[in-house]
Length: 368
Image (cartoon, rainbow, N blue to C red; front, side, top):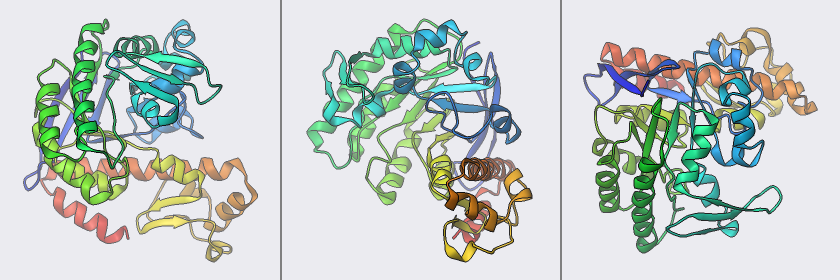
């Protein structure tokens, strides 16, 4: 079954919309946050726990899974879902962002990207065709076209060349795909140049992808520029197909993008910050290592009903974190993902009521 997207509600005062993405494997509601499971695991969390939090789709990383354990091994195990024990949807990125972030280890041409593994220095080549082949071997439900992501700041000529190459690779992606189940998403680039964003959107959205993504943000441009790009680009993407903002982000940035009509998000922030001792709460970020929590009997968030907040005190979590106990990372990860999941659920409900702007105002007034 090819990916189907249905809009079920629209907000009155913003461009926010609520919808459902469905494939042969199942369905999940949007707008949605997708936890990042880089190496076939969302660190510190069992798949069953993610299901209890309400997550219907997680993200896997093509670059890392290609290098370890290898996509052919995953294929022999029946695909990524069986390999990792996750029976809901999986989106895989193309691996392009990871490769392009390693400027000293890669070389880009129109034909391919040649790079050296960050693990052992071995040489590899990634093409639009092999990116499709790897993702199809992994058996993901939503797959991404290979694109060229440019860091900020960048000269116009570099960004323009990346737009041209991204369009070329997107066309080759369409030709290379073999699986018709699920969906393939094209990526719009263009850096911080409005005319190049417009050009990229026109070229990519003219191709028969099942959804479209805004790439090339969260690359050092800062919050103001990021939001300008989202506000400019989102209306250029087809209304009837899902829109994905890659690599974003903070609660405020996500809620802003939802108001502009974005449906899908991913970011390592809730899981990485948890491992570094920071929790998202209804009153703002909480850094557990601070001395003021040494004897604090309160839960991390008094308004939260996640397993961590029901059982553990701030004092106990601080003790675990200062001791380097793995339970600290696990407990704080469960809390942060629960926080993000509930935030998205509340956003969807507010859209259905037609009161999304009021919800965002209330949320951000509390989240300092």
